[in-house]
Length: 421
Image (cartoon, rainbow, N blue to C red; front, side, top):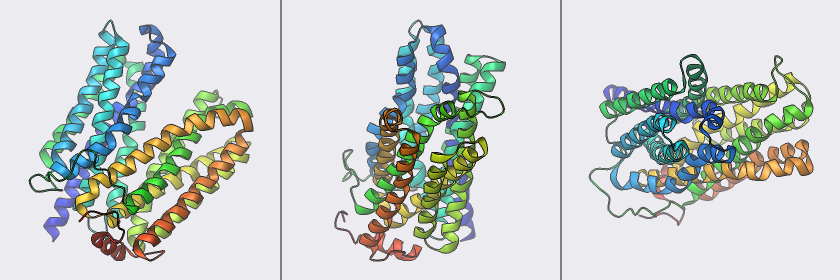
């Protein structure tokens, strides 16, 4: 048992290291491309499309990636996803040196979306496979924190290295870290999910079971409010309320507040997972952090000072991050092992839809009804997500607050009729 526990920890930390290092490539382009676009002759619209291309690609690829995991296993798609992301990061260098930079940047971001869909589908599935019920929340929190920290680390890498040494050097360094991530995964991460090949799973086989849809809808609401509303409108809020942090303009101040939110979220991602393991139940922890996110948006709606906005961003980060670990652990608890890849795919699809729709809805509404109404409405989304969570868990398990063991038993038995056996 001790050897098995050590092997599990080694695999989980290899997944964390791999996703963290490869995540640099996701963030490194953001501080560079907007300024570089004008030099290379890329229009602002095309820069926006390039930066968004990976998310739109992942939206299409999430479900097939999950099905692929249940069909052939986790090891090959995980390593392949990391290699694709490393290659995509290296294409940034080609783009800078090419006479058609927009085409190469677009190709790189599309490939990044394909690779990240494979990495996300496999990382959580591997963690579910090697963790036990009493430490699954902690393990999911650790992996989610690693994924979360990779992107802002890439933002710092892109900003600092490009300023000190140059843009090409920043992209090469990010690609080198991604290559290291691929090597770590190849050397350490074994197959955890299937033996041989499960030909009964088709690429279009999406998990529409009650647990997958319940967890996915919670993820949708959180990403809609967090990425879609907060991150899209914060710079406008600071400008409208004439709030400055340390003398920075609205862009600089919003960047600082986003960093506070991300740091808070990453910290409480781990804390939420640990707490759900200690309590032996996921639902109370999830509801508590959803309420915290709700309070954060209420504070944001009426905050008129720097200190109050910092508090709002900390609370929203706590809520969003604290939900992450136990929510993914709950999905693993309620899902049979042979469907976990597809369940993660469904969860990722709904999260990306929420993050993509948020800006389309929130930015026009801010101009029509104002920040207070938009943020107050956003505060209702975590509460609605909590209601969906409780209702879905009750419908599946027959209990409002099942213990971890009861959740796993119901997942193994498949009490909802949407499961295949």
